[in-house]
Image: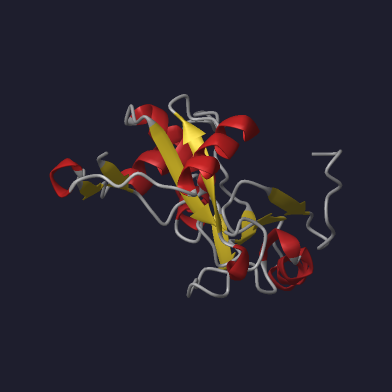
Length: 191
């Protein structure tokens, strides 16, 4: 098979790009909301949605005795240089065009994970003043004291910066915790 290399980028980007690139499948390697030692894979079908547990189990079963391709049958890998930009444009397109984030100061905690470039840039492009934290991934510090698993750090930063909102992502940016202007976690049911 031929492989398009995309990362690092958020898990939702993989699903979106599987459809956009008309790929047969997508693979995300991530620790999600866990420590880096728990890295695993998420598999997406051509529809851009996560595969069923049954399909994943079938693939896992085939991995126990993998079939090896002959050298002439091995596909090629190609990096898609504008993949992150494509995702960012898609994310921005979900925000009403007539609205902006002008006048809002937002603390975004990217958990030293996959959204470390995309989240601050998208919020800034929509007009917000952005205070970014958790934007220095080193391969081992994902979710380490930052992000949605440690939202108090973002809450303190919201208060210290006088921001109106805090956004805490997990390592692969498929879940979020919101912080109000007083540094308090917003109840998920309210969201």
